[in-house]
Length: 112
Image (cartoon, rainbow, N blue to C red):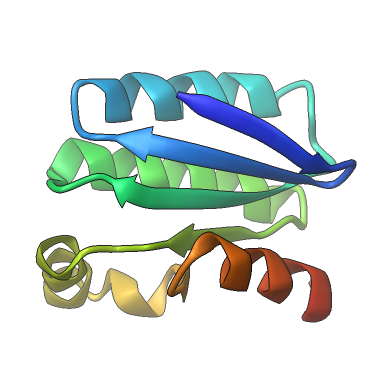
């Protein structure tokens, strides 16, 4: 997993397919226990497949961030994964952006 501290209040994380996906999100959730003041932008450019476990980890991450009044933006979702978000109704739960640059702009411009 590549975690980049883009600014004092924003982390950019590049994800890969499972099994790394689940391990990386678990590590990120653990890291956020000590960093409650950050928004997270997740890049899905390296993710081609999602399963129910992946979605559960994303929901855990979202819950942690919203509990701290922070934001999570998912970027670069491919067509196959996007279909899963649509089928499960999670397209209405998560915040999405076309790419990391747009996700970063969204986090910086829009109020919490």
